[in-house]
Length: 421
Image (cartoon, rainbow, N blue to C red):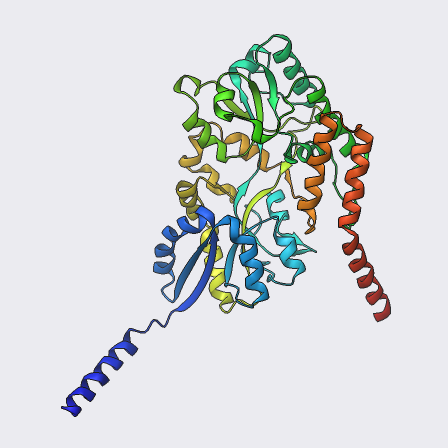
């Protein structure tokens, strides 16, 4: 009996060994809905790469930043992860990411988006999907004001806003929530402001490019063209847009689907999108922010070759189109934009044009805190609590405080280089 049992046990052990998965185990962390939907792409990847098994872990966006930080500190990072491209400089500063130069060519990507992944002259991320903001507008209302295709310059923009007000076409011309820094920053980028100095150590907020944009923003409220309201004070964005409370709104691609879903049927041919207006005539458009998510490889990745293969697969135009169909996220590769799935949506060409005119935000970990001071002082100026020069001085001062450690670190590095010579 014992011999029979031993023989059976040996057969079982042999069978388990025969079925043991010998493929390379590639770990991938995806964030939010993307982390859930990317699983649909895994079977095709594994069919084409039978020696690699992708293990996907989905992480909520609300917990993603802390989870990635904790993983780096605890030396438990995945091989590959999705990462918001504004986070990349922070993780580069912590020496967490690997250089991914050469994984895919840059020739088919939007230059401004690609640039968000370059820190210190090295590439640390490959764009996966892209994001930017354009002007959504009531085409019927702006047609009545003389701008059926939207304004092209700041002068036209101001004229269109004044005409919608004076002709009582809407209650307000544009909605720009006072607790959002993005409109101010996009105006500043369009006007040529670098936001910070070249070293990222001090603010450039009192310089003319930013100051002029900031004044344009404040004047929009002072002239009664925008309501001095925060996003929490807006009862129903879509209903208010439909009923003509405002005619223009700067927002992103996620709202294309929301406008189609939430606006009544009779409104579906009465709204459109356009690139941001340019400060001067002769410019293609204004400049918007370069957003989206990238694919990064951690320095401690155990399977670097498999990680690069996975990134190349997700970067293929065919996979980019399929991912767009699953999530609605805009493709990072230009070739994917020719697919029928994108071409049939009349509101997307404005995004494609705008993506050729985007710029990265400052690549310093302190940027989010600096941005908070921009909208805070912007709101104070809009409400008349501080004059514009004082608001700009306060933003510069706050940036200087936040960047003090960066200045100290750079001075130490320069000192070390000097000693080495």
